[in-house]
Image (cartoon, rainbow, N blue to C red; front, side, top):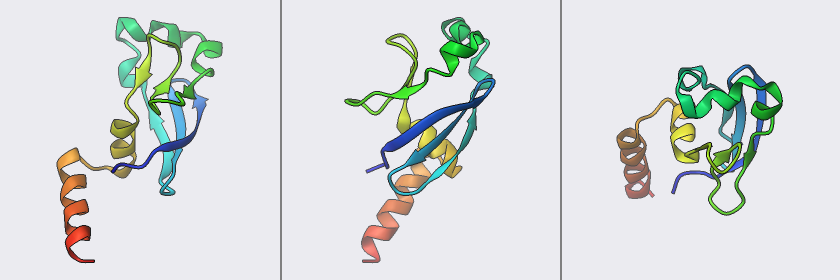
Length: 96
């Protein structure tokens, strides 16, 4: 199971800092998404700074229209693809 986010905060224009329950933490640049129409609301600093974690789904969200997958962001912080992460989990499970 991929770790769950514990905290998130905006750290600059289109960047957020996250910490997960396994201790993984870091800053993610989301500027590559900012040109897509759904993310235009991010141009308002107040709106971007309102980032939070959905208590039910753990999604990283701004409103009901803008949510990011916490697992994808976790893997981005780890620098892993899902396949690499899964392979690492299977390796650790068989070594115990």
